[in-house]
Length: 374
Ligand SMILES: Cc1ncc(COP(=O)(O)O)c(C=O)c1O
Image 1 (spheres, protein in one colour):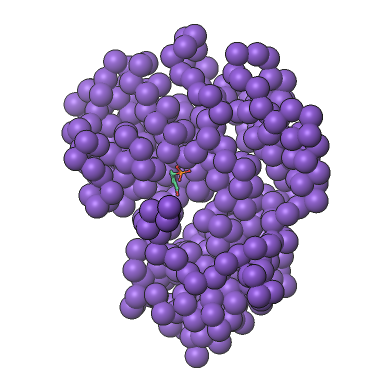
Image 2 (spheres, rainbow, N blue to C red):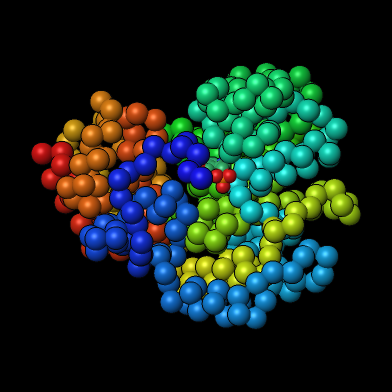
């Protein structure tokens, strides 16, 4: 059997990682400004993480959601405290798309409605409703195109108010910062107006913090820069530092119903031990503060480099927009400078490094970027 060929691959076989570096099978070292697509939060192969997972798998890797799992309870308590949503409840699943799928289901059970507002350039995942709410017709199969979604321009307060005033919208789903869409940031006044309009019209506000959450922007959630509180928040990526896991944070206004949501693998013992180890390291190494500090240094330095059309982002979620396509620039960064970066569309280079990136590594990246731009 061969692999189903859906990924355009870089010709590099990464076999090992440590902190913000990875190595290929020939022993070449790379600086990781991509974090395996925003997934690596605490750094590769952190010894405490390795120890916690190893201990857990040798004790109990998995049992089902039909018995008490005290690791889930510990995770809910600690996550609630660190992210500032102690009064919310946690539902655990395995991937970002699944988190959004469950968030939208909950919103629909609660409101009895079926219409959803999403935004131009949004990305919410590749399953049923998540992909329907994703603004990319190429990945929406005919079976997913069920007419639930209205797309609006991001930050257009009048358009948003007019649509919500119709009174039949189940949920609005919005990213804390759009990642795939090119590091587009919702404005604070837009988020205030959105929060207000959702409350007025009985619409559920879902913040997709799958890429922008878990400390990446220098606050636990990107929306916390605006001070609004959504009804549902979805998280994934950094939660398990590569162990597949995701969560839905649910406001107390939702009442749980036995059997309404469920999963086989979600919240298993091994995943919870990974997520608890991640939170230990967040606390011990002050990674959210580090993301804020190193991120603002990078943003400030990048803004001084000539040849970049626009630099935007918060913390360690940064987009560099260029006048022309960046495909070759990205390849040169990888093959000549040994730096992994991400991309959004054709012209935006996307930086999503592990949150432990230090100032020396930021400088190393800046020098390598300057070298390819010369
Ligand atoms: C904002 C956002 N939502 C949802 C997803 C989907 O997550 P997953 O690939 O884990 O299903 C992603 C993945 O890139 C994302 O960036």
